[in-house]
Image 1 (cartoon, rainbow, N blue to C red):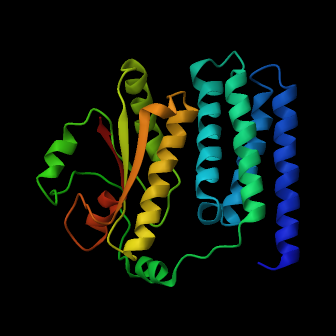
Image 2: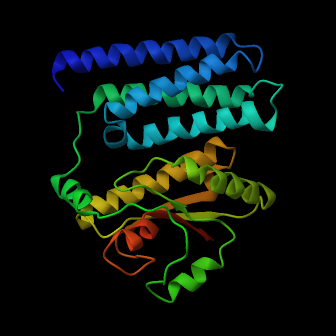
Length: 252
């Protein structure tokens, strides 16, 4: 991405996020939130296309989580009332932080090793049945009341099909207000140890940001990355990899 392209993207993103802020400030009914939410989705999509998941992973995850929760509040929890000022403020701050970090961060590329590994994948199948565990530790994991969240290859963004599980996890945490958790970020075996350590950290942080945006106190949450060192499923193809790209919850 050359300098003029970066400036052009930055201007477009700034205009989009400025529009979001104006709409947040001026909205008075739930119906009026729909254009605002659309604007936020557009801003997030542009950031993603410009490499935000690599260049600003924490800020991108926070903005995505806030948008998800704001949409959920506006359309499901109370469809005839505005999302509260706390959620508005969080979204404004999240998108501002994303804009600033994207302006400061250099363009990023996916390591060639990870790209080659992706090309070698024969099939991509959504999780359906629980695989044979790698170790006896998996038996303890199954006892957790919180559901694991799975990720696509080389991604830390939350998949649409995982939103229901996350919402149920939020409900459980709200019902057990004294519970504290550790979110473990895990990866499949492809890529270097160092790269996967960072990717696991971004995955765990993405889930934490979602929970915090949903109202869970950040002090109740600790994040840790195990990279590719603790696979849940044995195997060296997508049938195992899809289970190992995950965030796992441990009660403290």
